[in-house]
Image (tube, rainbow, N blue to C red):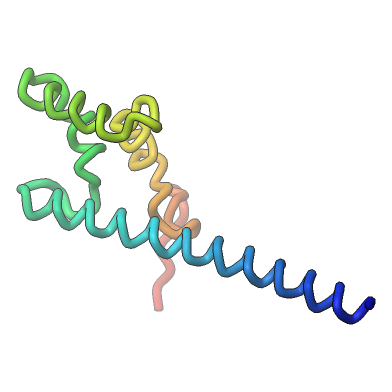
Length: 107
């Protein structure tokens, strides 16, 4: 019985790890598509459309678009603002690239 419980626990642990990995992979690819769409629409290649909408919200047209995107992501209050803050903190980058004061490694 112990062996069965051990296998069951191991399978549950591996399933949770796989789920986390798939979630991370899906998130990274959705961010990449968002950045690609923003670049194709004339924005910076390393910025999401949501972050761009928040950054450009000073004009009426951009503010309207920002409100529409926020409405689409209704389960994430302040989606565009959070995307902008995330871009500023470089949360979409690998951890080693997030510290702007870190010296670039020469290879």
